[in-house]
Image (cartoon, rainbow, N blue to C red):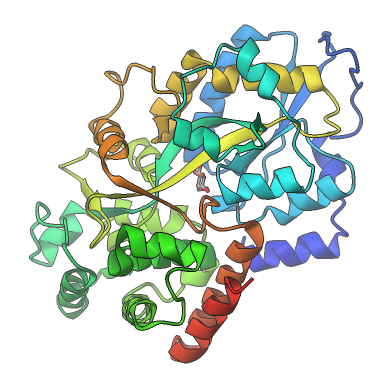
Length: 427
Ligand code: BGC
């Protein structure tokens, strides 16, 4: 379903769908004890088939560890967290799930500031988590020395994925897609547009375009310049951002025209089917590639997105215990699984991400994941805009509105686009 239609439906429904997922009709445990009638409702946006594989892996560990608690999937479709409005409505109505998915960074800080997530610093002690997560990641989940969520994984956003058959048809060497610049990438996309039947670059609706845009900003500005977009030291209205927006404009002209209708899976599926040569998307993509039995190096290849080698566009999922959780004991059990080495190994192997814990043995992980772990350890780390690391929820929404307005009105008013983006970060 189109994102904007879903949002409209949510608004029209008066934002009262919370009851559908069983948020209210469960017995509340005030004493923190679990009983056989207990359920735990977990909100996430892992609703696509390939993302559900990861959630299923977590549920399996949960069922083994806590057979007395029934897992209730409060998932709401909307890749990249693009339909968090429904969660927000439930939180504001005092009908929270027990736990919800939240990106580490500014997004997590928003929920802390709004008082929707419980201080779970004690659980870090109880679960023995001292020293198992990278300190920089914990900083993104901390306020005034208190911790509020537990990270499940680390994803990389700036990855270019390509179809080997589509590249070969267009006479492009699949071994040479580590483009040093966006311009070099555009040159190959134009070659594909001239010679082949396939879509040069597949994208989906607005949030996937924001995802693409952030990778272009990173390429144009470098890690320091990009970081400066969020602390005021890089000018959103300056010429470097202007140059990135021009590149983005050219790229949009080389994408599928039906892009607005889709979430992230469809453009990825275009690459799977060889109907598109490239897509730029986070590393939840391998789960879809592998569920289509595609083999790295044979059917698909990947590289850091153009112009971003040596930079890791970071995002991490984490889970909360909500303030007012109907079953805090259930939420605690869920968080224990999220935090555990077994839970992180089972989940991440399927999800495509790397464990947030640094003590998980990666020998059973894919070669892509092992490479991602190495990059995470050695690259310059920057935070994703779309995926809540660098931008607040309000800033991310304003960027989405700016991109939507630009792309759907013909992608020709660069001055307005840049002014809208500047305004998004003006406060
Ligand atoms: C989440 C990933 C998810 C992706 C697509 C990102 O915001 O962090 O876990 O797979 O969105 O839905």
